Image 1 (cartoon, rainbow, N blue to C red):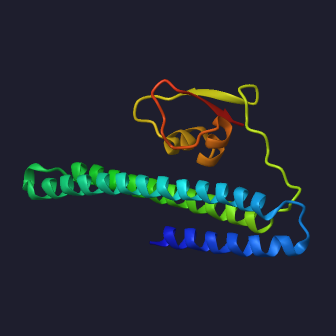
Image 2 (cartoon, rainbow, N blue to C red; image 1 turned 90 degrees about the horizontal axis):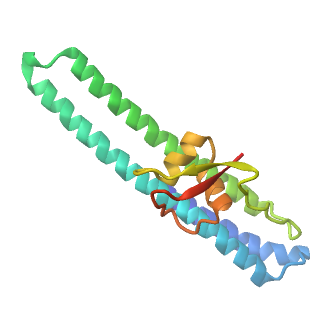
Image 3 (cartoon, rainbow, N blue to C red; image 1 turned 90 degrees about the vertical axis):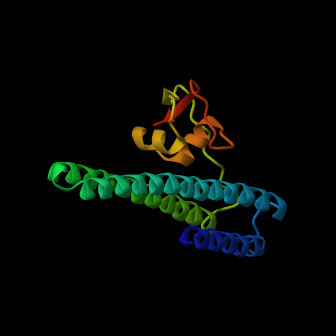
Length: 180
């Protein structure tokens, strides 16, 4: 799968970065750099896992709608052209959402990879967002990090960082800071 190839590429890039950075006289120790890179790889893996989960859900939805379309087509004259068009529009919408999720994760992977390859020893992470710097969102039934990120115009990684999340698990009623 293409996502697994990207993850492998990220790991190779990390190994290259680890072997090159000490030669450039960076102040951080190799152990510190490995720790930072391990954390970034974990985030990349979480992004890939979220993408794969989302892809599976959307693929199931598409199959279900395609089954409904087949039923409508086989219903003969009782099925209207509007019914078929409505189902086809739903399939296209779900497929577009699947592609948007895929693009968002790949863009985030590319951003992380670029950050890894251009990282400097003195570079510090930006502090996590607080309620004073962003809005608040209360998790509703059925919401995921992906759906919340899309609806608020932010990224999954930014949501994780702003809320110190170590997994994609959310609870109904949980308060999340939405970074600006």
